[in-house]
Length: 336
Image: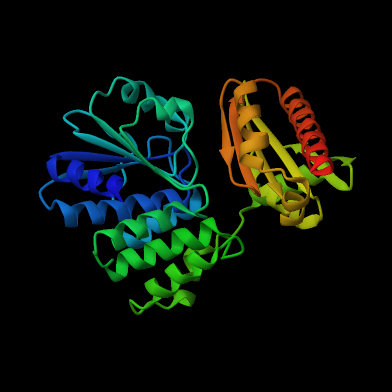
């Protein structure tokens, strides 16, 4: 691919590269960043490469960083940087405070993601390697290795596997290509069962309380044949959404707020996604993110929004968007 060749040219000419991940970086982001750094070092051993997580990482990512002794900077500098690579990040606002410096950056910005970039990123980028059909960004990084005929080390292979397993919910969202990639990586002599302790996080008391409070405050409604639930908690909104999905909701919407800062997590069942035609990231999180003057995105079964405003107002708007989209999808299906 011409894009891959252009990437190699940028790496070969760069003296300093920064790889950035989104806010509260998950394993797909952190693992993609590390594997990309290793690949870039193979292409240009002389370049200095920094991984930056300017808005922090989640708990599993922290375990990965500690287990593999990765170096990740919380306040990466863009001074003397020749190229910026963003991984698993499709919206400029996901990069937090450093986004102002990125908007002023005049050199190469390359986006690698399994979502299509938001216009805020698209207008800044020189090159985009984006595949919305790929279940994870780690799989796209693996394809880069293949293109350049560079074999991942055992450490890189383990990290890519962890990122893929987390992003695909332990292969529940995997494609046949995902399975093939995992199979090829395992040939490095990797035993997946020995990686399980990294993938599992024991819930602390605050997370258990959040899940229980979310269930206690739940509002249940029906839309067509679907059970839709909404609630709010002070923290652990994503965990609470997963719990409500497990309890039986077709779609769970869980919001939390700190002062005027708003966060909402969405989780749905695969059957809901297929029959309703609702892609949570595209159809619900993105328009809601725009509504709350923030950012929204994600996958078909899991998505999130950050922004500003009142919880009840945001959840009400989410319900309105949901109803309108399902109605539109139903009409299109009936007229087809």
